[in-house]
Image (cartoon, rainbow, N blue to C red; front, top):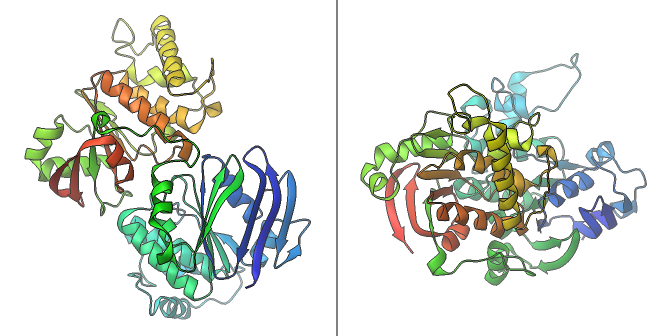
Length: 451
């Protein structure tokens, strides 16, 4: 079997340490990293967008001393970002068109015909003349894989970090990956948390402290042992993630396999409240703030990208209190009382230490870890003392090894008399966390599951 890519003894800024990876033609490889930083670094190394501090790169079994993005593209190695990077006024055919000089002859009809031929025989509900703005999140993710193939990719790297690839989207993407793999495309899927795409892999690698410490090889995706997937889902092979016993399940879960997370979290909550009012009143309660508003009358809403909504130009303390000016000063003017702000900063430090973090007096939020940023983004509304807090996909942007620490923080909110409710498209963490799980279908038809 032909070796397309090999990395030997790679060292890169403490994110990869004596790392080894060999990729053969026709493989689907799934790599799960304990660190939340290693996946990005690894993807950049494979696609030539970052030079390692040490180590060697081989392409088609030949060592490449000056490996870069241009060389990688020439060898058919591309990254397929699952983020939404398209222009809404483009058609699918235009999005898939290879880049050409402005003076090149262009036939929209011929292009559309070639795109339709590429879709033929595949279970893809896309058409060449569909506009990008008409596509849902699942279809846009599928388009990114098809686009990489249209550019001539033989090896496609898929970074899953920070992207929701679960539920219907995961099944559709998995089917497309398997279909493209039968046509000869090789895949490397990289994530810091468990993804159901692992179930489509021929080979699984666990990366711990920058090193490839465990690997499983199977002839067929269906042959991957369930015990391996269970360990990838629920905990590190070296340190359990603080799994809770049944008595400690103190959250409420909102599970919806079909909901497209490209739609807003507020829209989901409004749909649930309007279509299942009895269940809402019995198990949840409270009002839903207006679109984009994080707090209203005792109800707090934290979207999945909350850590990206912090203000980098403000200090940690200012980010913490900016939304709570009416509570942290003695009058109604938008002025933050310095004494109370210092007290809240001190309390935040205590929270970080309680969850295993040691930030010290850090002022710049850009120097915080992913977990610290996530906690800060939640604490901004928690200090308002809401009765209930709704969280969208709280574990998604947190490193594999830090899930237990975030769980500990959320349990601390319960001790502060705040009801914690979170939305997810998978059941793995909910089984550990939740005493009640509310199942919905596209935001409707709520049903209760008590654990």
